[in-house]
Structure formats: C-alpha cells, structure tokens
Amino acid sequence: MAAGVLAAPAQAASGGTGSAPPQPQASTTTGAVSKHIATTRWGTRALRNGTFSRTSFDGGIQIGPRPVKVSYDDPYGPSGRLDYARGRWFSPWVKPGFGLTELIASYNATTPAGTFIEISARGRTSAGRTSSWDSLGRWASHDVKFHRMSLGAQTDDLSRVAVDTLITNSGVAYGSWQLRISLFRRTGTTTTPTVTRVAGVASLLPETSSTSPSGPAVGQSLAVPKYSQMIHLGEYPQWDGGGEAWCSPTSTSMVLGYWDRLPTPQQYAWVNDSYRQPWVDYAARYTFAWGYDGTGDWPFNTAYAARFGLDAFVTRLRSLREAEQFIAAGVPLIATVSFGPGELDGAPISSTSGHVLVIRGFTPGGDVIVNDPAADTAKTVRRVYQRWQFENAWVDAAGGVVYVIHPPSKRLPDPDSHSNW
Image 1 (cartoon, rainbow, N blue to C red):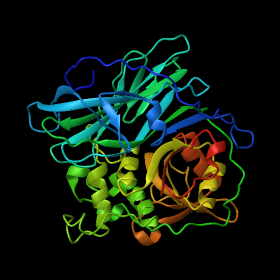
Image 2: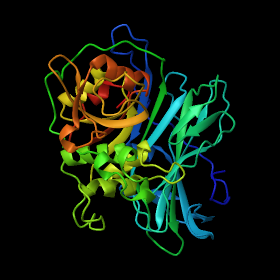
Image 3: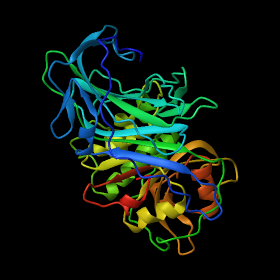
C-alpha cells in the first residue's frame, strides 16, 4: 500500500482490452542490437477503453458519483490526516510484444487546488504472476497544501521504482503491464481533477549499440531560445537552489519558449525581480518533487508542460536517426544524457550521472546541435556534439529517454508507423 493513503474498499480492475499497440521495430542504427520499445498512448477517445471505478468521463477522466472516502496524511505537510474523495481509472492490460524490464508513465491533467492524482503501475509475467501496484508519483499542478512527490524505491515482489520508472527485479520480465490513475479531491467539494492523456513506454534495451547514420534533418536547426540553468545558482533553495540542479525545468522552459507557451508575467510575479529568466524559477517550483527532492522527475516535467495547452509525454528513442525525424518535423526534443570524463567533447560539465538538454538540430555532417543549459551564460548554451559521443551518452548510457512536447495541432512524424510515439 502506498504511504499516506488509508485503506478503502477494494475496487476490482476488469474490462476488455483496447486496440493492440504497434509491434516493436528493429533499431534503425546500422549494426545495432534491436532495442525493444513500445509506447501506448490514450487520448480523449482511447481513455474510454479503460475501466472506470467511481470515475466518469467528461472531456477526460474525472471523479464520478459516490467516490470512496479515504484519509490522507501529506508526509511533507503539517501533521494530521485530511479527508478526500477518490475515484480510479484502470488502463487496459497492454502487451508490448516482448518481455519488458522498464516502464515509464506520463500524463496530462488539470488539478484545481484541493485535488491531486496518483499514478501506479503493475506488471504480469508470461507465467501469469501479477505484481503488486507500485506508485510512480503523486502529482498536482499546484502546491496549495499539497506536496507533489516521488515515493522512493518501493522494492517488493517483482519490481521496484527508481524515482519515476518501474524496473523489474533481476531475472524478471513482464509480458504485459497496466496503469492505475487515482483521482482525489477534498471531501465536501465538487471540484475534480481531469486527466486528458495517459501514456506508458515499455522497454527492453541492450547495453550498447552502434552509431546511427545521419538522416533527414542534417543542416537543420530549430530556433529554440537559449536559457542557462547556471545563472539561477542559489535561487530558491526550497526547490533545490538552481544551478546544476535545474537542468530539466530549464530545458522544459526552452521548449515552452519555442512554442510561445511560457507562463505569463502575472503567473511568475512572485519571483524575485532581480532574477533573470524568471519563468525558469516558476518551472522549478512546479516540477519539484518531494521525496526525490529535485526537479528532474521526467513525467512531472511533461505534466507541467501540458498545463500550457501542449501535448507532452515521455518516451524512448532508439537512435539519433529517429530524433532527426522530429527535428525535420519542427519538433525539438528534450533528452537525458549520462557520461564520464572525456566522453562528450565540448560539454560545459566534465561528467554527469544524469543531465537534461534540448536537441534542436543537426549539422550538415550529422553532428548534434543542442541547447545545453549547463553553460554558464545563455550566449554559450548552443553547443555541437559529435554524433557518436552524444549517441553513446544518450542512448547507451541513458536509455534514449526524451520528452516530446508539442501543440496538439502539430502532427508528429509519421506516428502510425512507429511503436514509440
């Protein structure tokens, strides 16, 4: 049972399955080991294929009639339990076509003050053994008497949670997976969260692959604005204090700026007037995860971006050849990388176990043009990294994770023929 929520009458998940997801494709890299990645997304129509328990549908999943009463003690707030009404939505069971070892869920939702959502996941082995539910986070767009949070490792029967990722135990693979969205509102109110999109990316990745050949986006560079996380060093220590800690909200803000969807001056009016690029401070506040104690929770960043009318989700790509398709379509990507000393020439930091930046284009020779927020100033944010070095740091070392953020009207590159978007 997740910490903080008292037991309530159990609600069984049942119902039919949705349409089958696309089958995983082989890697597009020359000579690479196949990377099994399958992303399943439920939009406003597909959400109806799930199972509704004390929830209903009105433009999205909402708390419905006769919700269950539970009490909740915010572990990072004042002591004392508060009464909430809860409804749940269960996704169909998804069979990705391979034995997955990792799963990341993401979501788009509106959460008025007094409401929040919790995202949980479980898996089922090919032998039919079903795991327990593990929480992948409690989220709200606000922080009014609520702390969005990661619940930590949750090591149990068949899998564990690493911040926002479900990871199977050694020797275990899931043949199918399922998500559960729990919606909460304070009792005595009629407000409700509304969940409009849900996604899950399942993966089984090899340890290494070879460098991909350059593709359709060579010579293209998108006009993504340049923001430095380092100019925020020491700002708002309650949200991890800027500097090296704010790579994710800074990168997310760059892509929001590209789409002209940054928060308004009225929204960030509380930011100290002396701070430059105050929209980054705003993003740090509203992506910060208690428990994890940082702003780098991947789904929290995409959920934050969705507040501004954008479709945002987390997935994995197999290679820079796939990333080029997004750049050619005019969609920048936010990527996470990991590298040691001497492994990424020209980087503003010597090494990192996890760093987030924006892929904005490619040189005529196929090298990667990025906006790296770890640069000391905005003027030096734009960098060019060698293709093979970047691909090693992003795909091999960090699993090819990206945030895809775009207006709903902007069609992604040939989405019907890919298993991972």
